[in-house]
Every structure is written in C-alpha cells, then in structure tokens.
Amino acid sequence: MAMTTVQLRAETKKKLDDLKLHPRETYDELIDRLADAAYDDESLSDEELGAVRESENDIKAGRVRSLRDIMKDLGDEQAIRPLVE
Image 1 (cartoon, one colour):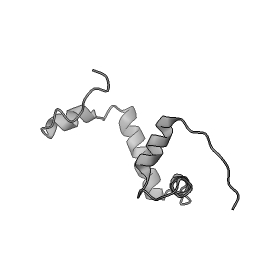
Image 2 (cartoon, one colour; image 1 turned 30 degrees about the vertical axis):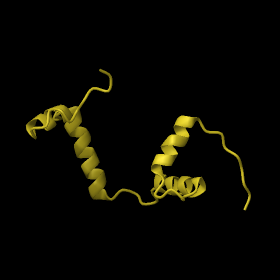
Image 3 (tube, helix red, strand yellow; image 1 turned 180 degrees about the horizontal axis):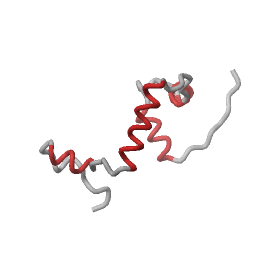
C-alpha cells in the first residue's frame, strides 16, 4: 500500500482523535470512514423532496420558531447558551 504524509494543525488532529471509534483506529480508517459518510449515493424520494419544498415554503412565509423559544416551551431556558459571553 502506498503511503503519503499529510500535515495537520494540532486543532485538526485533536478533532480527528475525538472522532475515533476506538483508540487503535488508524487515521486512515477514520478518514476513510468519514469520507464514506460524506457521500450519499441515494437520491431523495419524491416524498422527501416534497417535505423539503414544504419546509422552504414555511420559512419563506415566516412560519418558523427559534430553538430558544422551543426550549423555553419545554422548560429548559438554559439549554441554549451564547457562544461568547
């Protein structure tokens, strides 16, 4: 098997480490798994396309609620925290 070297920032390596299924999973196995997950060889069904169109129409018509409002309704106002305080 041909090998190649790839340069990664320390932050990227940390993210990859966090995505490993087990500590002995190689980076090659991990990247291959992630690449496979990125490809979807099945097209959307007519029902799925209809649901997407319906959602787009709801957004255009303003029929949306923020996640913060939904969490308040569920009694968990603290679930959504600002990214920067």
